[in-house]
Length: 295
Image 1 (cartoon, rainbow, N blue to C red):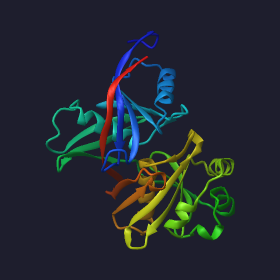
Image 2 (image 1 turned 180 degrees about the horizontal axis):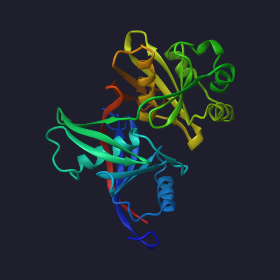
Image 3 (image 1 turned 180 degrees about the vertical axis):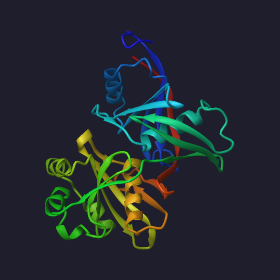
């Protein structure tokens, strides 16, 4: 099919990523064999699915597969997060990657990078594990008052250890530690104010988090990314990865962390990240819809 074709039918559907049960986690729309689609068509299809992200699977001359992902608003997103993990789990569950009876390593082209992903069977399910890029840190935020106001919080809700700052293992996000889980749930961002703070910090999204007082290796988080038309996301691998790497660089975790996200939205997700030494994100998914996309 060429981009000018007047009609096409492609395999597509939905998978809940970082989910232990259906209708939880972060839903991802996946479109297979998308090589013939134009960028404009991809954006329109992503808008039709109206999910946080839609991933298009294509051939690659640099890796096993090429992935491109777009938000419902039409913004392209890169980085190895739920957009990538979900696409591989989708293909594996459909048998498109051959048998996954032991750990298998694949390579994925995402933006300018080629990154590895490992798929492995665990108790009858397929889990994926992805390595992100090396951590890059921006300067600590000097004045937290505008950030606090943008989040609908008081300045004292924002902790200084570690300091709020932009971290990047594929996508640059502003990481903000809050005093407790209640403060994370209390956040009510104002779009214009948060966009201004993110623009000044050269960040795409804002990841607010707090440690679970009963479990030091566990965090509770929410993600806001209005810069790409995504108000709140249920599970964000491109934010969880840099958070783990940043906390590791500060000596606040010792190799691994589990992050609960999406609970406030009614889409509880569990992201598991280890440092080896770059952040590795792992999780499973559940296919909830598979069919044909005709347009």
